[in-house]
Structures are given as C-alpha cells and as structure tokens.
Image (cartoon, rainbow, N blue to C red; front, side):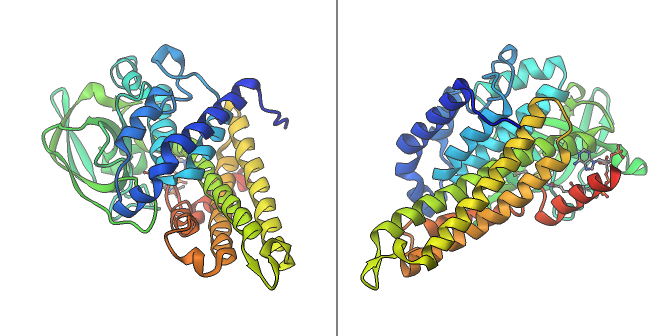
Length: 380
Ligand code: CAA
C-alpha cells in the first residue's frame, strides 16, 4: 500500500495542525480542569468543514477521503482528545451512518446541517445492561399510527448534552432478537426525551458524556434509519468506521505524549547531562516512536480499504485495538520520563495518560475488537 499523501491530504493535515495549535491548545488545560464542553471551538471546526469531512458535497460535506480524516483527527487529538471524540462521533458514526443508510428525506433535513457543522450528532447504542453485549437492547419502541413510541434509557452517550440529533437504537420486536432492532433519529427537545447529568470522567473531560431517557417519546416513522429490523446491522456497520476514528484519536494522544517526552528529555538534566543522552530514556523514546509508526500504518491501511470500498472490518478493529494499547503505553512512558513533573497538571502528560484509557473502552473494548478480529479470521 502506498501512503504518499496527496497535496490535498497534506493541506488538510496542515490546516488541522495550525487550527489545533492556535485555537485549541491555549484553552485545553482549562477545559480539562473545568470539564467544559468546547462549544465555540466545535462551531469553528464546523466552519472549517471538519464535522462533515467525508460527506459528499451534495449533502454539504467536505467530500474528503478517510485518509484525510485520519490525518486531521490525529492533529486535533494530539492537542485535545476531547475534541477528537466530539469530531469522531459526528463524522464517523452520525454523518457516515446517515449518508450511507438514511433516506433522502433524512439526508436533506438532518445530514446537511450536521455536515455543515450547524448541528451536532450523537450515537446512542449503549445501555446500563447492554454495553459490550450490544444485542441485549432494553430500550423499546412500538408503532402507534404513523409514529413510534420509545421508552428506555441509554448510557455513556458522547455529545449527550450538546447534540441536536441522536441516533437511537431500540428493540422493536423482541421475538426476532437482533433482527428486531431498529434505529431512529430523535431530535433534541422531542417531548419525553431527556438526559441525565454529565458524567464526571477520568479523562476526555471536555467532552460531555451522559445518559439519555425516553418516556413515551413519539418519533415520526420517517425518522427510521435504514429500515425496521436493521438497527443492529446499522450500528455494527457504522462502528466499523467509527473504530478508524478512535484509532486516530489514540494515535494523536500517543504522538502528543512522544512529542512532550522528547522535548522534556532534551532539556531536563540528570547525572550531569540532558536525560535524552541516557540510553534508559532513548530506548523508551525509540519504543514509543516504533509503536506509533506501526499503529499509524494499521490505521491508514483500514482507511485506505474503506476509501477503496473494500472490506475493512478486521483491519479497523486491529487499528483500534493496537492504537489504543500503544496510546496507553506511550502516555505512561511519557509520565515516567517526566518523573515527578509528569504527575502534576502543569505538564501535559498526565492528561494524555487519563485521556488514553478511554480509547481501549469505547466504540468496542479491546476484548470486543479481539472477538471481531478472530471471527473475521475464522471466516476466511
Ligand atoms: N460489522 C458488521 N456486522 C457485524 C459486525 C461488524 N463488525 N459484528 C457483528 N455484526 C453482525 C453480524 O454479522 C450479525 O448480523 P446478521 O445476523 O444479520 O448476519 C449481527 O451483527 C450479530 O452478530 P453476532 O451474532 O456476532 O452477535 P454477538 O452478540 O455474538 O456479538 C458483538 C456482537 C460483535 C460482540 C457486538 O455486540 C459488538 O460489537 N459489541 C460492542 C458494541 C460497541 O462497540 N459499543 C460501542 C458503543 S458506541 C460508542 O462508544 C460511541 C461513543 O459515544 C464514543
């Protein structure tokens, strides 16, 4: 596979890098401490076209490829992984899902403002009793005239308090198990739809995660995504692409940790010289850099397969599995290289360490990625 980036891909990477440095970096620490959702920055990301990167221009998107998306996600997440996940959910789960499986009506009414960044989306699959075991949906919906009535609860929803449109996975026919699951688009403000308090999280504290509640929430039939009974297949297929986004977020964190550790090692002195001159530190930096390159190749491979309309289920799971693992390892090593300074907020690396962990959990835990990979291997 050839990863010589095109002029356009390099331009997107550069734009994302400059935006991250000038607009995101100055307030990233403050937002983490205050757990504040970055409304203004999200608005600007939308204006740049970064919230609908892969959506076709026909639906007001930027019409870019997945490789460009990966490069932009890395640059944004390197500076603030909270913005990385906000961007990833809107692009890979919500916009992608609607463009691929939404009706013309939904694309016109919902996808266009999402792709322009005027509205924000969320993806509501997880429940208190259905996380990894996602077929055990308890949230239900029944048909009433030309509406469906949703009851139940969703958990751990990224963009939960800020989103305007929610893709909500529900059980509509228990007898049919996962073939009786249907996804609806629910608008914020629909009567009967509410959300719980924002979670107080270990990391990605600038992103808002909360539960959602549905009490006799009536949604018009035209808001069914794909078709009745296809909701689980919708979620699984969408998550395959989502995992490329989270792998990119993890890569951004890992690269940020390596940059910070390298910079520190060149200035901090111990035993009469900069610590970068000690092999103990050099080996750590070398291992971090090698792991990052390997994770990047896996992620770009998954992105290239997706762009070529080839199968990428196994490859996106491998990318997420490995990139999230090395994000945690690189962030921990960066803290170790910083010593005591790595343990205080003044230096960035403790945040990388806290932010990295979630990449091994959401959009399918590492254990789920191994299940997906093994099943694909055994199919061949
Ligand atoms: N791609 C496409 N289809 C898939 C798939 C994949 N990766 N994995 C499963 N499927 C399909 C199967 O083909 C099957 O479809 P059919 O019956 O129509 O042929 C159907 O899904 C059921 O599959 P299984 O029989 O394998 O079901 P299972 O219960 O044994 O396992 C699972 C399913 C893979 C474990 C699945 O439940 C899973 O992926 N769980 C993790 C859920 C997850 O990733 N949650 C993340 C929440 S969203 C989030 O985090 C967003 C955020 O806010 C950041």
